[in-house]
Image (cartoon, rainbow, N blue to C red; front, side, top):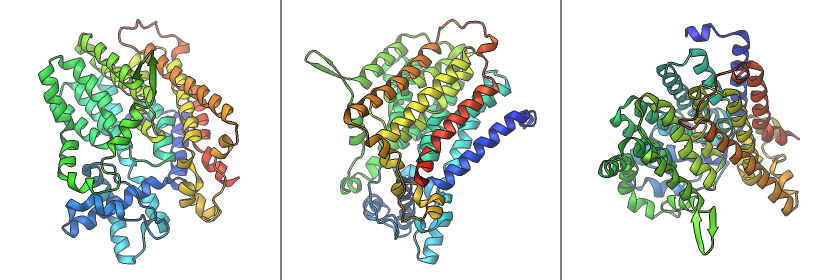
Length: 462
């Protein structure tokens, strides 16, 4: 609280502008996938009260979102993730039973569903704060890291523009890293077990951290089993139920995306993500564990682990929320060249966001996103508006390939630069005035990120 009271007028204005941006996004964006997840969470209450919980996945996959949106779909997550979402949406469940209406017909119910992600976002910022202060960083620098994370396009895109729930994975992962840095093995395993139930790609962080500290094969196998325990338990309990659904186990899609980008070496084909991940594991195995540097090294390993996935596999736009706090933590922990890292993070986030607009335009399409919220009420939900992806699709196939290649080059180049500059053992140059992040840089980055985040909304009103 003392740090907040000491904030300058410029800092307060910057945080206030970010808060306003978040409010605009929460009240105007709602990707249809979130509505599907909310319906599944409400169905969890029905399954519980009817005593038919073991058929939760079958019943959920067959239920439509509601009267205005008859769409049905897969139920991809382990049961544990639906529990907190169901608890949050209990008022909505009661309202549906009392009125006979479905939640997507009510604007306040949709906003309430969007607000569920605010709690793990606040929790993630608290973890960053604790990690920074415990590492001896100045409070104003830690607060700046929280702002860099909260205003990152990786976060704004997935959490506020698309409204997905990957922020739960982010919070659990950060708690796991925090426990790892403090040497609390049990909590490290517990938090990552929860992270894995949200998304299996949390293993890209969990396994390298395990290898870096443990080194003993049998102990690593034991801890791997602990990290997978909650996810495996859910799959065992609901195995028969899941196998009866149209999509069965949705990890197949994840594996397909994981191996989609390949390198051709003569007659041999190698999955890029696997190659990068094996190289990281080799580094973690041979690297000496240094207790005094464990905080900085753990964050770098997490960044590198997710880098193997987000650079080596086909990923969906909202997945990058899990990746979003790591550049901010590296900027905090790095101790030098922070301004360069900030611009690299901004450029990489912008390239990733625009790639999502181009490749996954359906996720930002008015018919599947903004028309459900305040923008739809103001512009008449029956009017679909214009989608940004229409601009991209109007280009020739060659132009589309060139744009995609340029964006991916910027994204991968910036992420590799952050990886290389912040690597453990890199001799830090003495911090100069030009290395320190100034308020002007923060404002420029925020305005660019805000402009891109609001682009699908602006297109809708054109």
